[in-house]
Length: 192
Image 1 (cartoon, rainbow, N blue to C red):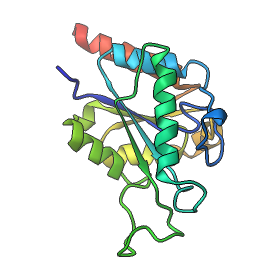
Image 2 (image 1 turned 90 degrees about the vertical axis):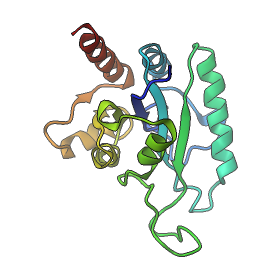
Image 3 (image 1 turned 180 degrees about the vertical axis):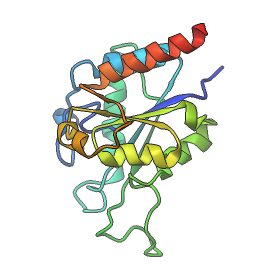
Image 4 (image 1 turned 120 degrees about the vertical axis):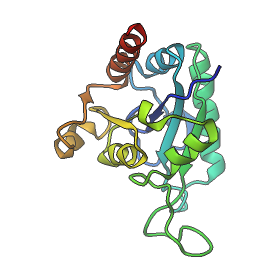
């Protein structure tokens, strides 16, 4: 039976080393422990879903196919660790660029919850039993707006962003440390 709990992961600065407008596989590097963390989540029965703002598309730096190619590359790299991502959602918009044919603002760019809500509908997820992990306040706010539990990591922009967080949002050094805490909590609840 598929899990209805998910851990949403920001991509750049959380899973991989932050690199502005990343879209080429040769520039992709896992943050140490990130691939192991994703496997731990999968082994614990969580869906793992990437939610990432990709404004480089709106800016014309690359297209959606480049993002899809990079995600396939990440999948290949994760398979070497016996792991995988269940789904990728990305926002191709930017507020300074036209979002769609109607000129309406998007609902998917974090801190808005659109990507998380779409994933919840697609996978029948229990958002209050789910988490989001990211390195920016926008990730935390997207999680709060969607009704799931946010966690900030100090990788990427996280060291600077930690000072801007609500006091009750947990902060961990990296994805692996955050995931170990989630898995431990899930194990403790299963024993109750």
